[in-house]
Image (cartoon, rainbow, N blue to C red; front, side, top):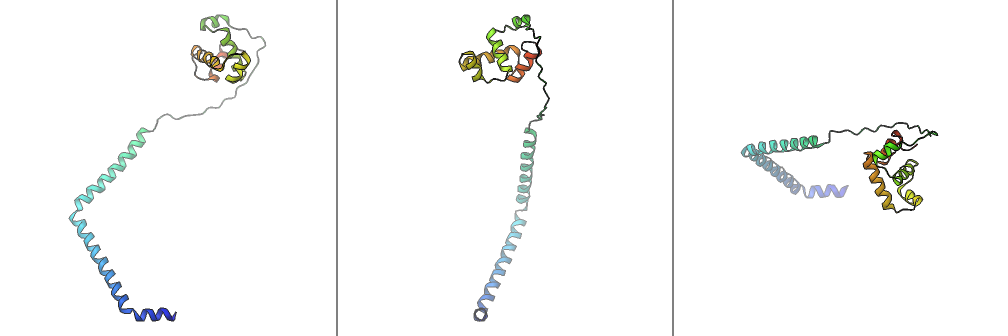
Length: 159
């Protein structure tokens, strides 16, 4: 503590001079800024307006480019009932031009088998199964496996 008092008393004039120079420098910079603002006020206002409209433009573009469609997930309970008296609608099979192999793949698909499992059970390649599935999707006018099974059940193509 005695060292700090000794330092302050020894350098009192230097500290006061430094503080006064710092205050004078602050005052000059403040005045320079004021005159700068007065001299270039129009450019500053235009710059602020440009920033505001740029921000509004970005916000509006993001708001307008968002998709308007909301995805709604609907869960429904499916009751699987085995129809012991199932009769294949052969007229519909001939009208849709479904082959015997496509019907086999459709029934295995309804049992929940994967493409690889279907290929193994039928002793065909995986690409053959995929080709038959593409043909089935096209003939049944569906896009997914579950849609194909659901439509085939509603059309009495599988039990």
